[in-house]
Amino acid sequence: MRVRAPGNTKKIADAMAAILDAEVTHPDDVNMDALGGYDLIGLGSGIAFGKHYQRLLDWVDVLPALNAKMFVFSREAHRAEGRTTPL
Image 1: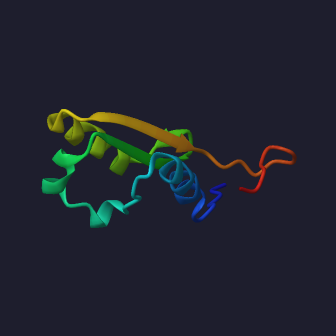
Image 2: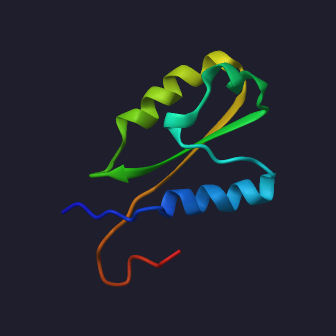
């Protein structure tokens, strides 16, 4: 069974960005040339069927060339009694 929780990863990213005074950008809108000017780059994604999305892994492969500090956060939704809490 696939469970989708639209926007939950963005809610987490927005909460971190508010603390870090950072911006949140969808991967389709990222300007790769501008990324070199950032001190810290975070990537967030859901997990499906116990695996990270390939798109996230592709970004992880590309970004080290920028020599920036990076982090990844991920979340997985479960549809089971008592296992999820709305954000």
